[in-house]
Amino acid sequence: MAEKVTGPASYFPSIEKKYGKPIEHWMKELKKVSKLTHMEQVAHLKDKFEMGHGHANAIVAVFRKEM
Image 1 (tube, rainbow, N blue to C red):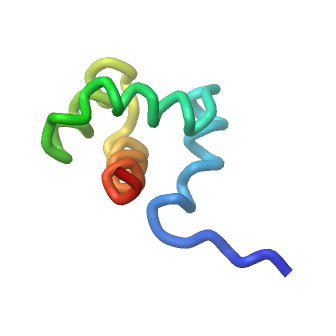
Image 2: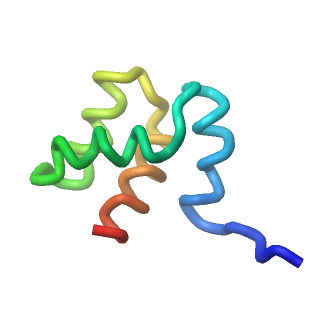
């Protein structure tokens, strides 16, 4: 039985569905602004791609954890 995904990554299926791009796309976008703070990265996704705060925050949280 597959382990249930929890935490910020649990948002990934709905993010991919809503914005029509795979998570890898968003991780590449964040690499471009990797020197910014967490909240600046969230603002980048919200401002440039009109992403909701919760979705942007989830992607940034996983991105920064994997850096």
